[in-house]
Image (cartoon, rainbow, N blue to C red; front, side, top):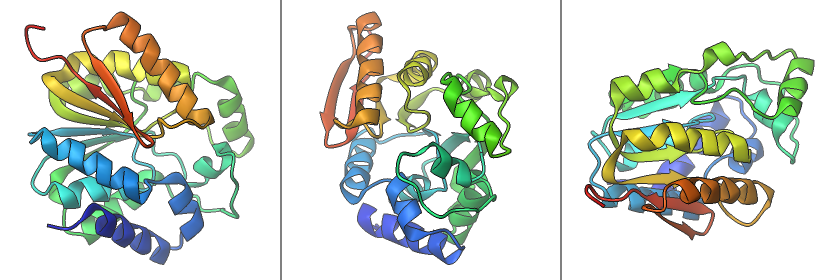
Length: 239
């Protein structure tokens, strides 16, 4: 079975071959240690189905698919042009690519022969950029977003429950809290919610603050951080 670091490297190489800047992809995707942690934690659940919320261009998607073969994975992404990530990130690259996230995701899973594992869904999970400044920046670049594109409730009702969910979408506190609130009832008792970018930087503080809000409402769950990866352990049934 392929190692997480090898899966990550191969996915980034393929995306670079498609014309994306390597530095841009690496900056906005899983780091090596994150990939190892996410795969280890996911494997511990022996999942029957995984939900990925926020794919970007598919590095984490490929890592999950290659390292957990034959596990069905349901993906939700707003499917904005890849350039949107560059517009919203603090670190900037010379990017002008208007191809969308799910175009790259579909290509990468097809390239690795794992497309049958995946269901790709276009839309926001629980909310559409609660931070108005983000909408303004995107609109100035000709990228329009709409609250009508929120599809999470429909997807979790149709596809849930899930043993593992990987949450890596909008990192603003309000968005993360909203995503957790919608997701939680559709997790299998004893399951795991994995959150990317839960470190000590600006976005990590946003993610952690959202988790603390969530924990105040759900004291039955446990939370820990390993590196930049946050892990919420859903209470077993009856707890």
